[in-house]
Length: 296
Image (cartoon, rainbow, N blue to C red):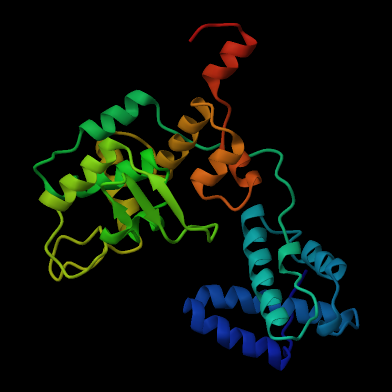
């Protein structure tokens, strides 16, 4: 669907002002303006008042708008429209909340399956770190949280000292992608890795955030730091992988241990089971046991 220059309604502009204050990223705001301008053009051509729009019309608009975009770009614009529809509903401009109905079509195949590390690669990665080095102590602790708990880099970055319950051997994850906080068990080795970092690598600071920068004024690590630490370690060990490979490996380990898809969903912090199902690739050893009747 081709966008032409058109003046958008005042409520659209009001939302863009609100959205701009939230994200503060020029490119993202431009993307939002682009789809809202096209939506307004669609409504004008179809002689539809935006306050009377239906889910069928929204679906038709998205089909036209996204037809030439890649799946990833389509998801982005679908997300933009969901947020706008939620705003219209909360502000009383439309009577029904259409946001939950704007979903991606089911994915029956992945062009790029999840990547995960083999046991020997994991062992090589962890054993390559120098425990007398403060940077390595910090990286070692972050890798434990990614591999043994399946945490996302953002979840690791936001952990505070108050979130770790050493006696109970648990950790509280406050901000998850599914908006549902979780209290997860902490393996003994992960507790040791965190303790080693706190005692031997974490600078003295008033900040309660667990992972800090190692140069004054010792602020909490930045958004890109956790992936950067782990990626550097992987590169040093000639592993063409990324931080998320550790999370993928955690999912594979849950699958191997016999965890149900629902249990995997809960442990991974996914919003729905479909996300967990797409996240997992075939367990090769299990396939060989069942199909080839091999003992592995």
